[in-house]
Structure formats: C-alpha cells, structure tokens
Length: 361
Image (cartoon, rainbow, N blue to C red; front, side):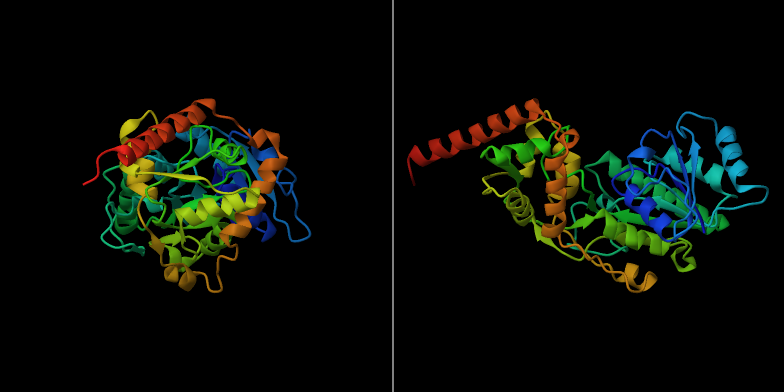
C-alpha cells in the first residue's frame, strides 16, 4: 500500500511510521524534514527488501507553501492518476487546516484519517464509560473545540460527497521520551521526575483517585495501522486506547517505583490549580485529565480483529524512565515550574498547619 503521512515524526506518528515500514508498505512522509533522521529503525534509508517498505520523503512545510505547490509535489510522486491508499495529517489542529487537506487530498486519497482527540468528549461527562457515541462538547478547552469543528466538517463532506474520512481519537499516548503526567510545566515532565529523585513533593491534581488511561505509542500504532486501507472504517469515528484503567495516584506511584524512590504526593484541587496561574490548567485538567474516563475499545476490536494493547503502564513507563535517565537531551530542566511547585505546596502546608492549630468546633 501507499501511505501518506503529513508530519509523521511525533509521539504518536513516529511509532506508526516505523510500523508502516515494518509491514512492508510504502511510506510517503510530507514534512519539513527536520526530524526524520531522529526516528529509530533507519527511516531515512529506503528499504525494499527484508519485509521493509520504501520511504519517500517529500520536503514541504504544509502550513506555508501554497496548496498548488503541495498538490504538485504529491502528484509528482504518485504519477498521473495515482492515489494514496490512505493519508493521515498528524499536524492538523484547526478547521482551516482540515479544509485545506480536503481541498488538496480530495482526489488523491482512498482514505483520509483525521487525528482528533478523546478530550473532545463532553465535559462534564454524563458517564465515565466512553464510547465513540459519547457526545462531543468541551467548553473548557479551545484545542478540543477545534478538533470537534474539524470532525463536523469532515463528516459533513463524507455525507455530502463521499469523502473517505476516518476519525481517530487518541487519549493520553506516550513514547520513550516523555513520562505522561497530569501536572507539569512548559518543558515537559523532567522537572517532576527530578523532584521525585530529589525527594521533594510532587503535585497530583485532585485527590488522585480519578480514573485515567495511558497508551504506549507502539500499541496505538498497532491499532492505527489496522485501520489503514480498511473499508469498514470509512465514515467511522474510532478511539484507540489501552484497556487498562489507572488512578492518577497509581500513575505517579508507578513512575516513582521505576525511579526507585518513594512517592511524596501533594494533592491540590484541579480548580485551585486552574485558578492560580500562571499555567493554563483549565483545558488540560478541567477539560480533560481531572475527569474519570473508562474507554470501551469494542469498536476498534471489531474493525481490527486481534488487536489488543499489550503494554501495561508500569512496564511501559519503566522503559521510558530508563531511556530518559540515559539521555541527557531528554532532561530539560524547568526552574520556574520547580519554584512554582514549591510555592503552591508551601501555601498548602501553611493552610493545613493553621487549620490544625485553630479553634475546633
């Protein structure tokens, strides 16, 4: 099969790119080319033997080049009248970007996969049990509302003209370079890990007992590639997650165990974290991670027989922690976030102490 990925080197898409080549399919990567060499598995090398598919790199910034130039480059690699069996844009976040993809790819693809988000499901939730029919509505996060607008547009085009769209909704997916956590600063999770290693308290939103799901990117890739070229997925929305459900306390405890240190947790309400600033936790917490979610992957398993997420979180995060500890480039410090955590925790401790000392009813 001929598969086109726009982007293709991120947390989710890098694993899918590797799997596409392992399956022996031809992968066309349309991106700026800045990170292709970072992908493990020799993606820069074109391989057509040993079960490896060909890699074709199309250097292009889809957000700055004209649609005519992009279409010309794609037609050039396809040949006259050619089509991609499937295409996915991993860097489309807004309605104008989805509309652009529709205009460019409308006649060039047999299937277009739009990467949406499980954060698009209704907040507050009417039920924590999530299926693809759970309503979409998120007043707390513009990111999610943009994804909903894209879904609405693309599904309308499917109904009106048969545009072959498949909607894919990931939840919290991680790779070897990032530890998935609920509360962290602008530089990612390393500063939280460092606090654990230094014996400091780390902030867990709420009481830590809300339910969440973490999915390893290699598991996600197995589900995603099962949808590529799948005629039964056309016109459908499909969520791809692990079946394992964890509390946030269990998530942080698994990270601490992987580091070989005790977990020292400071539980702070999500509403408080959202209100105090300067970090914007309204969307990421109130509109997402503070909610209990239990995903039903029955639809995915019907479309991709035999699929199962095989990596348990404690096993996957141990590999991630070991990778990060062995690679200095993943250890990006964030002193501002560290000081902010100290301040928030100090306020919490002071309030607790004053209440303990105060008059009792």
